Every structure is written in C-alpha cells, then in structure tokens.
Image 1 (cartoon, rainbow over the protein chains, first blue to last red):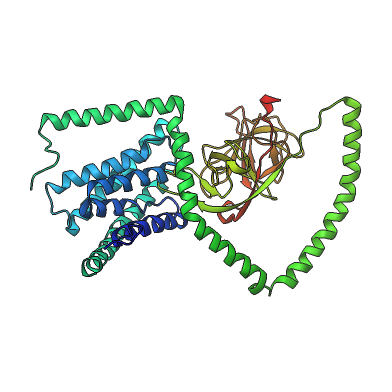
Image 2: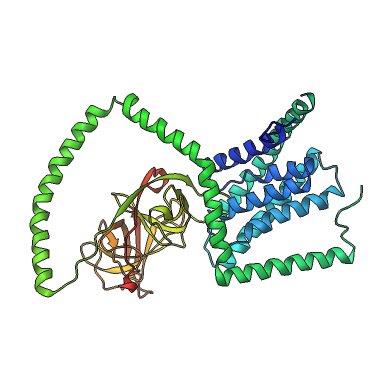
Length: 161
Length: 282
C-alpha cells in the first residue's frame, strides 16, 4: 500500500523510529538507540535500507561527539560484520542470537571507544564507559524486542490493507 | 544456510585487510585535514537540530506556560527575595560607578587600551552528552554559527564559566564543560592575582588548579577568575571557588582544589560570548 506521496507503513515505521531514537538520545546521556534498529533492519529489510539507516546513524552519532570521524563507522561496521558472521552459525531471529550479538557489540564498542579516545590522547572516565556499556546492552536487547513486536504489527497491518 | 563471509576463504581475508587499510587511510587523512569532522559535525548536528526542534519547541512552550500561569505560588516570595537583592546590588553599583570612572581616568592617563565589550547570545541546553561518542563532559546548546558561534566560543552563565564550544553547526553547538579532564582554563585568584591552570577531574569531582608555585599567595574560599591568558576566555569571568590548599614538601607547586561556581548538572540556559577577538589576533 502506498499513498500519492509514496508513504508506506514501513517508511512511516522507519521514519518514526529515527525521530524517536534521536529524541530518546536527548534524554539519556551517552546512549545509542540506533543499534537495535540497524539489527532489525538487517533481519527484515533490503540491504539498501540498512545502508541508508546506517549512514544516517553514523552522521547523527559522529557529529555531537568529541571523537574524530571513524568511531561510528567502526562501531556500526562491527555490528553489521558480527551480524553476518553470527547469521552463519545461529538463527538470526532467535533471542539467543540477539543476546550474544548484544554482548559482543557492547564489548567491541568499549574497545573501539577506548582505543579511539586513546588515539586522540583524550582522557576519558573508564568507570562510566563501562556502566554505560551495560546500560546500552540492556537497551539494545529491550529495544530490539520492542521494535520487532511493532514491526511485526506494522507488516501485518500493511499486508491486510 | 550459505555464509556471506566464509572466514576460511582468502577472499574474505583480503577484503578484511582492504577495509582496515581504507579505514586507516581515511582516519589519517581526516586527522590531518579535519575535513570529515567538519562535514559530519555540520550535517549531523543539523539533522539532530531538525529532528529535535519539535520536541525542544514543545518543551520550551510547556515550560514557559508553566512558569507564566501555573507556578505562580512562589512568585510573591521570589519577589521579596529579588527586592532585597536589588537593594543590595544598587548599593554595590554606587560604589562600582565611582571605581569605574576612576579606572577610565587612569586608563586615559596611562594610555591603556580598554577591553572590547562582549555580545552575549542566550541559548537553551538541548541535551547532556548526546550519543555514545560523547565520551567527554559535554552538552548541546541550541545556538550555532548562524548567530556567530565558532570553535572555542566561551559559554557562561551569570554565575560563572560553563565551558567552550567544541563543534558548532548552523543551529546547534557542542560544548566542552570545565569539569572534563580534557578542559584547561587559564585562571587567577581574584584577590591575590596568583595565576594557574584549572583542569577538570571528571563528573562530580573537584577541579584542580595546577602550576601554582609554593610561595604564591592563595587562600581557601578565594574566587578564581579567568586570566585571559589562554586566548579563549575574556579576563575576569568567575569560574570556581578554592576549597583546599596543600603545600607538599616534595613538590615545587601547591595542590589546589576548587569547586565550579555553576551547577553544571542542572543547566537549562547558558550565554555564549560571540564577539570576542582572540588575544593572538589583536
């Protein structure tokens, strides 16, 4: 189903997701609400849409940070890489896969942020980075579960109409 | 299921090396030129500004309406408190007028160039440490290059210094706070004029005044103001209050701790000093 201006339920879904992700990041310091969306996009959508969403996420995350350009590319590149590697070993929609993906992504994120800050000789607060990593792990899993539920509802609505 | 990246294949390893090489090349090139930082900084912050503007506008409207109509209960008490403050400030103003005219006469006498007046631009705090890459103490302010904000623009409140702009876009600016370990502010004591460098120690930790020789005068409770020697902050802005001084026998310098005058965790509005001429450009 598509309107005159090309509005489909899936386009509305991803637009609302991007807006909500930015809004939530305004309220939760140091958080990333795009990662779980990228995973869902990898599971459900064509690679073109994944690429578009990832590029937008990289732009949004790179801009307000203190790190030089590259950390976002590495983080989301690692996420996509782990997803494809894990897909050959696990069923990509299983909760176990999502849990393992979240764990590996969180660990890689900590390493990437720490290394990139080190390259710029930036002093960072390691304890907080660790704590926020744990929060991000929880948000990743919960965020994916909520998104997956809403996405299934949206696809059902789209197929019915 | 067919694997997309079979780990054993030589092609995959070559692909991985190519990606790493490309990333390192881009990173090094950007490190030298700063091109990608500028592009992502401007475009990315503008995207954030566009997406967040409806939410920021709504919250501002709600806050304004709340302050104007609903939260009137405390207005009478606040009015009394403000009248007392106005009386106190008026008395101080009489005294300062006399001293200011004396300063003007002395400047004319000795041929000193007076400091340029600043232009302050008010801004609202949009977010604290936006995104996972915000590994330093920072905040987003809804003013950018459109009103003259640039890199290193000082950010203050009427109480004291907040920090300086790290990365501006058209409508948003990312501000590095003075509490961050990467922040350095050239300061001096307001009474004894002892100079030093104020370094942040992380969130909810005291600041440290460094490079104060053992024999220099400084006392606990003294207000530290900007010295203007860093070419970023104008001279005389209050920054912090000294809380602890130690003179270790094994060091050439005093150990000085201070607390910021501004409550950086609950900031809602800030002022950006937009028309400063850098010291080295004068």
